[in-house]
Image (tube, rainbow, N blue to C red; front, top):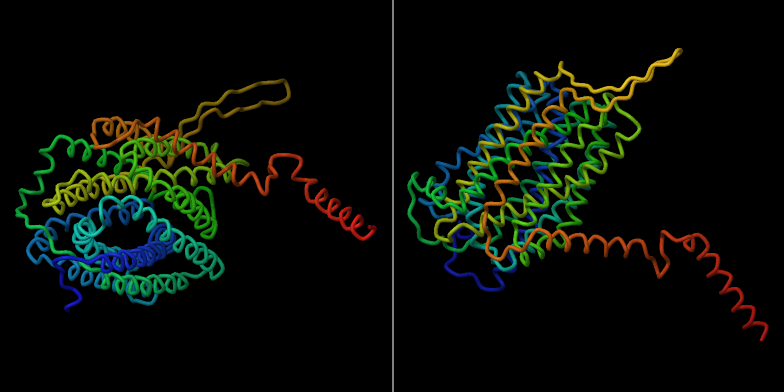
Length: 491
């Protein structure tokens, strides 16, 4: 129990050791989340007989569970032992993954039981997250926060991506619902290892502060933080109208396999890893708001382009388009996750960080859950609706139809999410962040970094990949070496 007690002051060695354990925890917990959630959880639910509304209900459940943060804040402020709360509740929440893995073997209605087990898992995890957010705000130094979390997220996505592809191929090859049980059991074991590393992270003592449920409303009285809340609410609504259903869309409409969906997910994660290499440095130098503005613009355009993946069926460009959209979404989602957390911590007073961050988390949860729930019901409504714009050309012996626009079930909620994201970007413009740079400066910096890396890839040993020289350069090198040898031996 002594290891779970907070410390008055951390030495440099203790801080470095804690940050290293924090990186390992991030890798393992992200791997657990990928194997027990996302496309794998969606495929598991579909295999159990779920429909669109049920998928939306599962997605909304994880967000509505955030409401437990109201009593969780009181618990954190009363006990003032955040590490103890995190370890206890995260371990309890991960036990429910074992029950989810056992569903094919239990004499219960699998869909109802899945909802019940997920509810227990999410509720306990959200209590842990409330204490975790406050703990991490006091632990990670603000001057390296962006760079550190970018590195942690980058390593986490690398491990989870490799496991995701392996799990996808295994599930396709096994072809049975019992195969999901082994994947969930592996997720549970990774969660246990994650909890072990969390127990090795030191906790600094909490700053003194008062608590009442009225404190939850105090952040909304500050105009700048209220503007951030408006943006986060609209962003959460739009993004969760789309993201929870992309896997279902690829499974049901595009008829992609689990392995292909996981590969596309990994493409998105690799894109996140690539940009997170320098996003942390950019946010530390130029601020989080301009990066959020760029990420929001990329996300809105990507959501709109999803409507062209069918016209009205799969076409030759469907897979290349989906591939490119996963790249753009990888950048947008990683940037938004990193920057929204950083800017919220930056705008929160240290002595009231718990209530500020919890208020934002509650708003995020409510609108994320609303987006997922509304989308599930909306898809069932639009599935039998269609809006088409076709040009017809008539000849004596044939008739040619050219589809300029064709919107069906999923396309309608892609469009609605697109417009909501545009309004969210409008609200972001009212947020003020100390040290923020103009968006064009950050955009140019990002583009210059990408161009520099592309030039590095396109040039190998001074030979440009786009030049015809790349074809005959190896042959020229061989003939030069041959001539040198002949001159040497001839002399």
